[in-house]
Image (cartoon, rainbow, N blue to C red; front, side):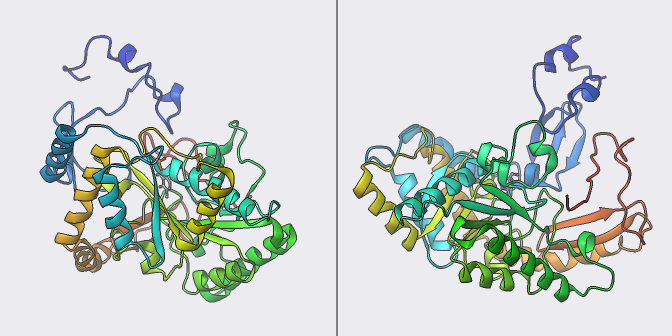
Length: 413
Ligand code: PLP
């Protein structure tokens, strides 16, 4: 046990509720307490140094000791440590960040609504989709289709969009307006003898059937991460998004792209949307937006949607959606500096240069009997561990494969 912990350390940490932990099972061990960061390394209270391959929660894109971000925060703290964007107020970091962000975003996304987390940004997307259709006099067009194993957060709406059973169970989620369609994992869900193209075609047909069954006049939006992150780094097969986008256009269904993990260079282009040629109507960003140094997120919108929102305000009065800390000036200043660094250091070129070597090395694991598949894009990758390579079977959930690990139950139900 650590000498730096108090004699009562188990009691000291007992009041901290740890997400994704089995609270009972982990009580005796206590968490790994991280105390320092240095580049791509972190250090625990016992001085153990770890290569942080996941950048925290896929978020500290510039590492754990980027001084320019600290300086940007301090400068802004001294100039204006807080202001809000309500009642026709604004401040320079929010304005400059909105310009910088829409400047690098996929074409057509010219407006941004700020929030503090990925979950809040996705929640706002759901609310705005509903508001948008009310303004267009389509009160029935409210359902949102998400995908199994997608991750979009944990609040009531974003947790409903998330397609993971443990995020729903006993939280009374998902809400009735949210439906889930197939997960595009060829490895897990293709049928025997099915080609990647046939798999993509089958999933697109299933999506179309779902829209038709529900009634296109009731289906408002479809949400997707370009590559599923937390759901298992799932890269959809070639042709999948092309087919999906054609269906969305056919039934006038908005496309919300969740770039919370894929954004800011991780897939080799600035956004996953650029990598997969997606045309979002709405796009959410967080994490890498500030390299996670401070909480900030955004929901980007097209002119067309923004015009409908403005018309709504003219009719109803104030646009009654906002958050006290949204675009907090210090977080916005840090995010602005983060984007400047991405541009100055040509982050996407860097990812593209490293990616072939990254996959060359990871692919060396592919023949290992415990490895089912190596997959990913850019510097986002997964090595799928399997109990049975031929049958593509995961390890049983209990006992866990390694302390603290969770085994995913891959099923379409
Ligand atoms: N969307 C995606 C793709 C995510 O990976 C996450 C978090 O991991 C979220 C949304 C939710 O973000 P937050 O945890 O900031 O609420």
